[in-house]
Length: 289
Image 1: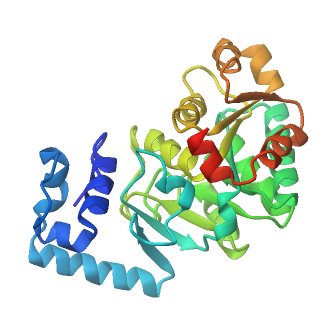
Image 2 (image 1 turned 180 degrees about the horizontal axis):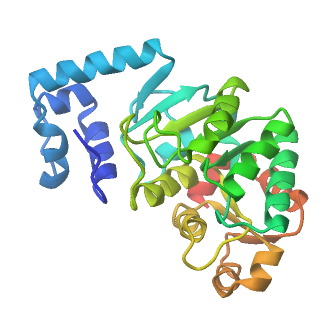
Image 3 (image 1 turned 45 degrees about the vertical axis):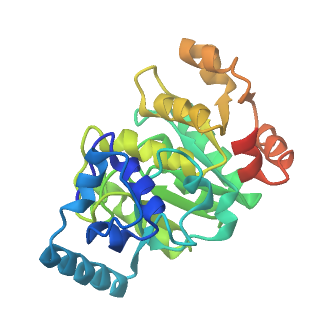
C-alpha cells in the first residue's frame, strides 16, 4: 500500500467511511459501496502476507518509539482531521499533545537572507514563549531557523517532514531533529519510514503542515516557493494566513494574498497572537468561519 500523488486523501475518506483500515485492506466492503475505484484499489489489493509484514513493521517501529496514527485514532491531530485532503495515516516520533491544536506554521525559502533568518528565529521564539506550538518543515533556511527559535525558548516545535521519518533531509539537520524530539516535540511524516525526498512529497508535506496548524506565517518566499504554495493551502483550508510586512513589500503574490479576508500583514508577534486571542475555539471557528 503506497501513497499516490493526488489520491492519498481519498484513502482517508474510505477508511473513515468503512470505519476500519483493517476491514478495508482485507476487502470487507459489507454495507459500503466504494465511490472511488481508484482510491479503493490503493488498499484493496493488500495480500495476507503483505498485511502480516505491515503488522510486524508497525510493531517493530513502536518498540523504537515511532507510532503509526490513522485518521480513526483519537490522537490524530484534530486540526488536520478537519481538512479535506488529510492523509490516512501519520508516523510520529516524539510527542503530540492536545495543546498542539494551538499551533502556527512558520515557513519560508531555503535560500533565506540574514534578515529573514533572524525574523524566523525571533518570531518562533516569541510564539513558543506564548505557549504556541511552532510547526515547520525541517528544511534549510527559514524552517531550520523557526525550529531553532522555538527550542531557544524551551517551547514546543513539531517538524512536518517531506520524507519518511527515518530519512532526515537535509542530513545536516539530523542533530536538529534529535533535539526536537528530546525537547518533547515531534517528527511527523505521512510517508513510509524510509521514503526518500521527491518533487511531489514536499508540496504534500505543506498540505499536512497547513492542516495541523490554525494558521501559517510566511517569512520570505518567491512566487515559485513551496512556502507560497503553503500560503495557498492555508487559505483553501480556511486557516489564517500571516504575511510578514517586508514580504508583502517585495513580492507581488504576497500583495495579492494580503487582500484575502483570512490574511493579515504582520509586523510583530503581537499581530499573530491578537488574531489567535480572538478565536475562543480556534479549530471550530477556523473551519466554520
